[in-house]
Length: 205
Image 1 (cartoon, rainbow, N blue to C red):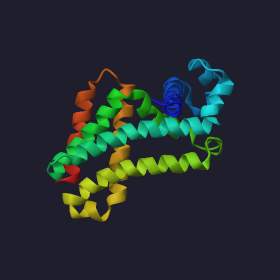
Image 2 (cartoon, rainbow, N blue to C red):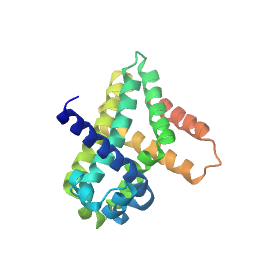
Image 3 (cartoon, rainbow, N blue to C red):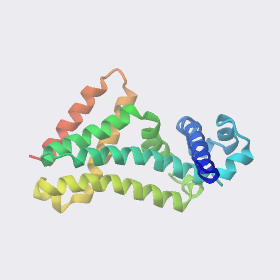
Image 4 (cartoon, rainbow, N blue to C red):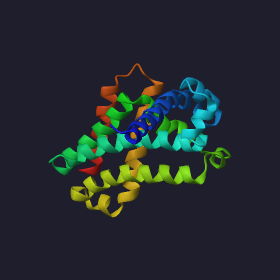
């Protein structure tokens, strides 16, 4: 391995180190209350070194959000790509969404709860337009996977109102996870199964 390749690999490793350190801070404290010096300390770096990799907190958060979305998009695309009937594919998509919430709680909360809380009202200006656009594009990519499955065989009323239907299901599933987090005594598998039954019966009557 040449010097250039080694430096690129070291830089990529350091970026991953920073993102791993930043994720629990943003999860616990939110975007607004997390500071770059705190991230640098958690990553065992000098603040100046941190800024060499991420010039601002916005830039760091963008990468963290997109990293989380990459995981979710990958799960959804894998579920949709398998040779299944449309109903079975939709069922697999719900399972993929729920497994992401179960397996990656920090990422899930950053995408659906931390970010939504922080961009409300005056906090939106602090986050920045670029971040909001990139976040929207990543969310749209996820929803497009679901729309592609539903377009194949869902009821005509679903196909003619695809975007609001996908938005409604997306919000409902996120709400199910939020409900479960507030009432952890309920088994996640039971809550997820009931949510999937309701969604599938509505989309494929």
